[in-house]
Image (cartoon, rainbow, N blue to C red; front, side, top):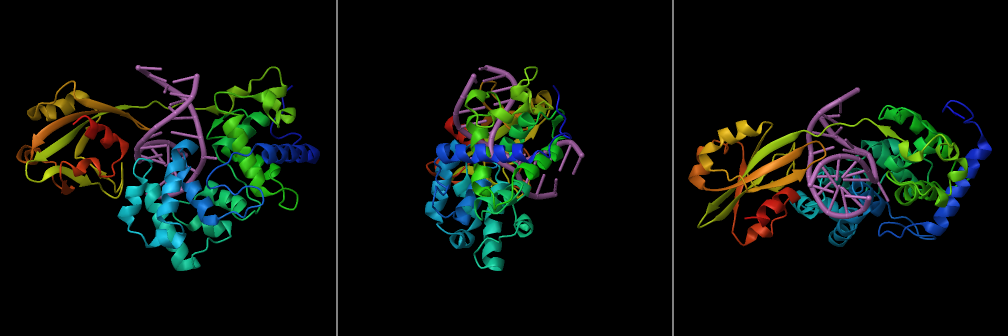
Amino acid sequence: MKISHASSIDDSQEILNFNNQAVSWYAQNARSLPWRAMMGETANPYHVWLSEIMLQQTTVTAVIPYFEKFINLWPRVDGLAAADEAAVMDAWAGLGYYSRARNLHKCAKVVCDEYGGEFPQEEKLLLKLPGIGPYTAAAIMAIAFGQRAAVMDGNIERIFARYRHVEGFLPDIKPILKDYTQLYMLDDSVFDPSSLAQALMDIGATICQPKRARCTECPLSQGCVSYLDADLKPLDYPRKKVKERPKRYGVCFIVENDSQGYLIERRPKKGLFANMYGLPMHMEDDEAEMLKRFSGCEIKQNQFVEHIFTHFHLKLYVVKLGVGAFYDLGLFDNINTEWVSCAEIRDVSLPSLFSKVVKII
DNA sequence: TAAGCGTGGGC
DNA sequence: TGCCCAAGCTT
């Protein structure tokens, strides 16, 4: 049996079953999360928005402590808008994808300046806000405001790729999967869009997982093509094109000064670790060339940290040297530097890469 | 359009 | 250990 995504998708009874199964399952199995309004509670749009931004490409486990921290520091959006950008960046340190923090702060200001501190209840307007893209706008519409929206995150993509057996590779098949979300996520007079969206995300996170599919526990299995068809395996979908991760090399400089401590850098507003504090560093693609360039500063073969980014693998040598020697390397131009004392450096909010470096000092 | 952008955890 | 992965957005 082979069902193409073009056939028999007008089966309204099947779609109704899908919705019924998902929502009933959610009523019994919803995860309890700090930002989540449970049955009978009213959703807080600020909490929904903040959590959705933090959860972009980030695990629930990692987000929870940061969400709590932000809500304690800034219980409402107007407080966040009034905060210094540096304070927001510092509170975000360690969570990754730092442009999210900048956009979060910008977004809070727009919401306060242009919308009186209330998030607009229109998807078009939400999409214009910094850091809010198609997924997040739809999620806020559904979860915060209970309105129908085609919510499609990685979980929901995966569920529909398996449920409807969509061949082809991500991201090519995204438009097809998007069509399915619009088809299946029914009018809000029939099912609560908030429950439905969160149901699918919980099912994706706990049952229909990327590397494991607990199909016998899945409330959607009775309609799932790649489960029902003996020739298909749910785990094969969605297919993805694999990209290789290049290896890059760098040197990180511990610049000490007896009277003033360590040299740190406020990084540029764009690029890696945008706008965050860091230690002076330099990266290159070729290891031999880089070692040659810095042959003057006695790089030790066993003094390095490794760090895996989404798009490259970094081996970062760590070198101690004095101010004069550092100056002679010619890296000082365009670097926005500050001094911190030896005691303070461990208290500066740093991206995890630099925290690793500080630990081996 | 595709590349750039972090981090910690799971297997 | 090495690789994959998580509630994507921006340029």
